[in-house]
Length: 390
Ligand code: NAD
Ligand code: ZN
Image (cartoon, rainbow, N blue to C red):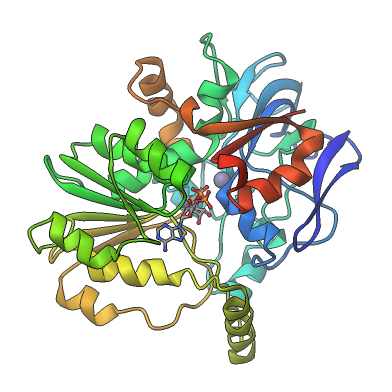
């Protein structure tokens, strides 16, 4: 089959690789009909995520049709149309029983190794490095889905692929970000990053009672979409001073709830040398995006909540923790427990309360994936979200 394969930093190719096979009796094989590129894939593309190996198949936002079913799978059958979550979860460990699927203790065979490298033991995930299990991803013609009774959501309605695809990751992520922000009716919610995750955070913030939403970014098309579809007020951080502007807009208090939908590429691991090495690399690339977290902690009002869906890995430097402590901020964050949110959010899409498709700017063939990665990373051609069709 054809698949998008990681060969190193900024080196994604379309390769012919072996078709996936059932490995465990709880697996299914899905023939992919649509698959997206995520901001999280950019951490791999930019070479910041450790544990990638040349030859790894990328992608964790796929959907398609079940074509093979392991003998212990009870909830899926051949021909089912499914959206597959990025999180792989066993459904039965201490964490899964609490619906903390992204903390699953069993789905990552390399969890102990990851703990040594990064200080925590992540769950398994599709297409996201050997530290998260080394599972092949879904930017391919076919995908092996482990623990198939726990993840994939069967779509029985006539909704199109584009309407349901983002249930795999970024829609649940935007929703959990808004939920974690603990929004009270009428609150002012500021969202850093008007990428796909930010756009869904904005829509979900309104749904959870925000009285006002402010989006912060510098990419004109993204700010425009936040205004047009997200009904947000916007701040262009390349032109305005974010802290001062937010103070002005909130009677000198700061926003009640702040969402960091940017994250950080400052991946520093293990030893001081590695941290310094990464710091140098970051400075060269000008991508010390921990800057956003610092800004968010400064801007949030006293007693407010900071929600962090943006991904941070490793160690961060000079975080104003004193401000966070003395302002009495609540911090909530984490990888999304996608399985928990998929079905309720499908109902919101069916009810017309969430509009997933306006973020799609690029519909391309899987073969065009290598160029699509660059376009999406560089925010060229007004690119907000890429959907690839095998
Ligand atoms: P993206 O790269 O498309 O969007 C990020 C946006 O942040 C861009 O529009 C960029 O211009 C903007 N930005 C950069 N610096 C900024 C600054 N200083 N202030 C304000 N905005 C700034 O990525 P995305 O797909 O929207 O994902 C966003 C983050 O969410 C990534 O870190 C991704 O890894 C993470 N993510 C987390 C989960 C989870 O489970 N928690 C799931 C999916 C994605
Ligand atoms: Zn993703």
